[in-house]
Length: 163
Image 1 (cartoon, rainbow, N blue to C red):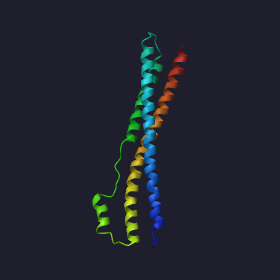
Image 2 (image 1 turned 120 degrees about the vertical axis):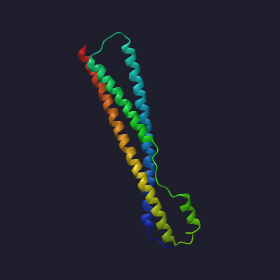
Image 3 (image 1 turned 90 degrees about the vertical axis):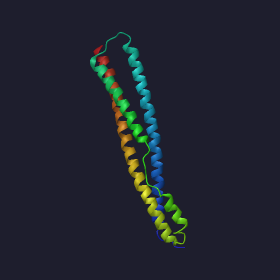
Image 4 (image 1 turned 90 degrees about the horizontal axis):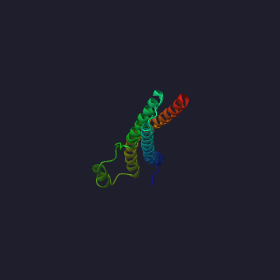
């Protein structure tokens, strides 16, 4: 039994496993950010409606900062949804897999390992591209959420300073 190429094939397989785990982690974090942003939008809108109905007037800057915060929380949730969106990636088609057990069945172990490594590499490459898009969307989602929290802080400070 030849071990030619086994180190490379194992390396590609490990990277493919890591990239699949990365996708799972990104999607889980996106779900958390979506839930958090949606809850904060609901909370801020509810408190705003409750306080707005009290007959009290608020500084223009306070109202503007709260509106900006709401917009940023909504943007954060939308970006997190983009992160959670399914991304296509390449996998061997059924005809290729069928050829393994028909045409290629008698290939040497080295040839078979090489062919499988190329297929894993194709999957890894396209999966990594999709995960990169997910990662960027999640990064911007978290930035929007932080800016929204800062805007809420500005609104509170503005209101405290105006009273």
